[in-house]
Length: 163
Image (tube, rainbow, N blue to C red; front, side, top):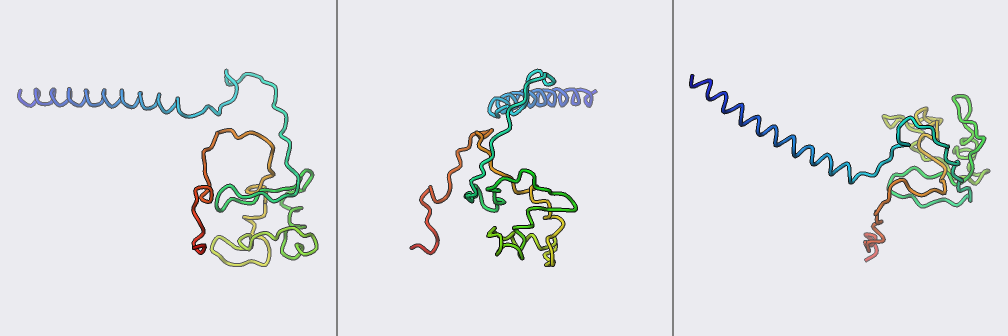
């Protein structure tokens, strides 16, 4: 008898704890849903809407500053009509190590000639062959999500050797 009473008391305590946890979870989920901007498409989801016009590419051949460390450089020129397949890569005709002097294009990084294990290759590594997997042209569009990012230089941080 005593054991059954004890089990009932424990069950009630656990039930109240679980109910309280569910209320907190529901409240937190609602708060997070209100903070995150919607990046979904049309409502209702399968509605037919006219397509937005394609953005205009920035093709002024001016190299852009990178937005964050280790960002792949942005393509500052038009790549419309460039062939990029298993058999051909038009990017390499200017950016490959042996062609940069004649083309004036920046050479691709030496990391593109390395395997995952750090072994140097004579040619571009197969995992770095498809340039547009990382490098993209810049489009003249508004950002999807606002950013309040501030660069370290704008915060007044000086270079280590500038004292």
